[in-house]
Amino acid sequence: MSSIATVMTDMFEDSEYTSPKEAFEKEGHTLTIIEKEKGKTVTGKNEEAEETVDASIDDVNPEDFDALFIPGGFSPDILRADQRFVSFAKHFIDENKPVFAICHGPQLLITAKALEGRKVTGFTSIQVDLEYAKANVHDEEVVVCHNLVTSRTPDDLPAFNRESLKQLQ
Image (cartoon, rainbow, N blue to C red):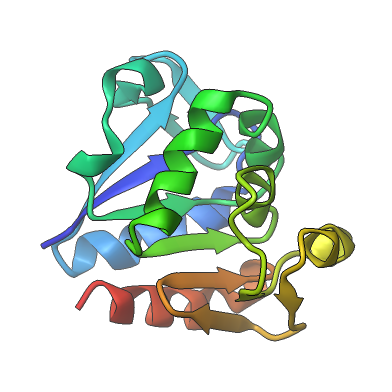
């Protein structure tokens, strides 16, 4: 089973974390929540989900994980201001490991300059940002481009979860 690095902080989109988490764990995969501070409690923007951070970004090595999961909400925009998270995310793209980014999740990959020439989707408000990052943007429920799975909104979660799990087989 796969070890999935999950980068998130406060203001993540609750269902965009909890639904994939449930799908991943049901299939036997493990998630490690990574933030700036180990032991901190992070809260979703709808205050429906709270999680305890498993590891500090300073204490993890991307080589120790099989895949990367970036839930949406405001969390990715906060994380992309920190070069440690940008470099961490870029490793997965560069090494062709599975990357799952939903809603605003691709913002972290934009900052990592990791989307040029890739087919992607994301929340409506970041689609022009994806275009400026030279990505090939599609307004579809799920877009798979090699190792990268992207979706737009919580409505797309069934397709996002399905395609993400296929990458882990």
